[in-house]
Amino acid sequence: MLKKQELGILVLRVVLGIVFLAHGMAKFNSGIEKVAGWFASMGLPGFMAYFVATLEVAGGTALIAGLGTRIISFLLATTMIGAIVKVKLAAGLLGSGKASGYELELVLLAMAICLALSGGGEYSLDSLLSKFNSKKNDNKAI
Image (tube, rainbow, N blue to C red; front, side, top):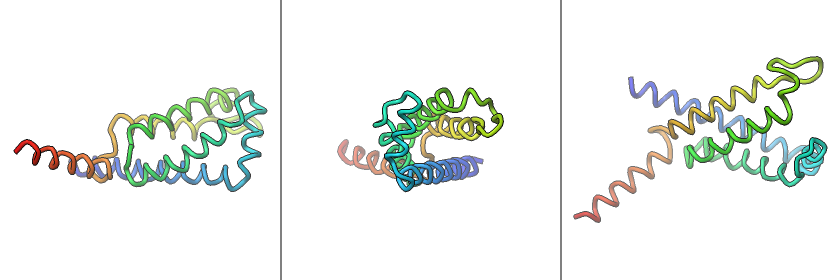
């Protein structure tokens, strides 16, 4: 049973990482200056676009590897709360007219919260580093 849960965490972590990596790359590829202008048009500081895009690219990559999973997931969850409240909430869950709803952001938020609580799982660099540090500390005790 435990291995199935660990595989579930792996799938969740890698898929979330891929989605955020793709969204971050799209922000840079479409012209980060345009994204900064869009942020400013919503009343957010334009520099936040650079922070969010960098977090999505670096954080997505880290999640795929399972490095810093809890921290990265918390930061991405915070970003999704901001996106829902500031951009999507008015359109409703499924959207209205041309405006898309916040269903995707809600799912990404839930995934990020799960990983922030569970960590990267057995199949992650976090786990590998933890085992390495544990062995290193065991050797010091001798």
